[in-house]
Image (cartoon, rainbow, N blue to C red; front, side, top):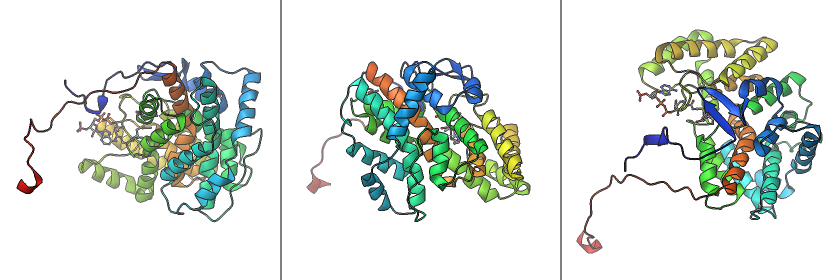
Length: 370
Ligand SMILES: CC(=O)SCCNC(=O)CCNC(=O)[C@H](O)C(C)(C)COP(=O)(O)OP(=O)(O)OC[C@H]1O[C@@H](n2cnc3c(N)ncnc32)[C@H](O)[C@@H]1OP(=O)(O)O
Ligand SMILES: O=C([O-])CC(=O)C(=O)O
């Protein structure tokens, strides 16, 4: 038995949800470029869960379900009041989602119907949880979501309590579409491993949130923003990046396990970063990002991934840095739940082998003789 480090190139599941073939990403066969340009996030969620785009009635029924499930119980809000105001926001999300399960009577009901209902509940509540914590830690009361509004609208609205601009809602919606699913990425794999033991959907999502938190995965969007903040201005990019490359340090937001010729989502986020920068009259973050890309791609051949330009996009939308990875989760919970439902449909426990590299057989030595 020979191990493959990081399971590179190993096909570990069959899935009909999303594909990456020759650098092209599709959700259920629809090219991400078309979905980014024309679909709403709600249409994409329906597509991921049900395998087809919704008609008007199906879309309104989904919207109604989101409206009915978006509010979080006062018990969960009261728990969140006790969280430290400087807690890691992904740890907050992980804890709050775990707590949600305690108040769901269907938590351990394994029927398909109950699991779809829980997927709706999770998708509806994740944005509410993230926005509620952002307000609570600032000493403000959570703002309830508005019925009949998109997840993108409500998320921005619940953060500030003010009606968001249409252009901001459009950008947020597109970012959610772009992050919704991505084949067998680390967090989705973690979710599938957890539920393949026939554990419940909440446990799967808590596992996924934990995996997304890391800076080699979803946490990279925050790390990119931290780097942009450290650099501070366009004229400092060259020295900073060159120094990092000389020290063989990683540049966050670059590279990918699967895409070697570029992540198809990055160009959409780059365009959004430029548009939002122009609109705000401040293109500094965009220009800095482009310069970083020129240097890193020029010297290392590494291309930006989905996390690179999303950092400037979210900042230009006025969102604090430590909400970037939770926003990734707000979108990706659609894909996680689709994969969990798919896993339950055709389940077998996921249990690979390890190549043993420890000592050969040893004789036990009693404690007194050691
Ligand atoms: C949503 C997402 O999860 S997208 C990914 C988000 N993560 C990041 O942006 C973090 C930075 N990037 C990375 O750490 C990696 O590129 C990963 C984790 C995304 C992929 O990891 P792997 O598939 O193991 O990387 P891969 O095998 O292609 O790396 C090849 C070489 O490029 C280097 N490399 C990869 N990414 C980077 C980077 N961002 N900066 C500098 N060097 C890099 C590796 O160190 C390796 O060098 P070596 O051969 O000298 O050891
Ligand atoms: O697929 C991956 O390894 C990481 C990624 O880009 C994602 O999850 O969107």
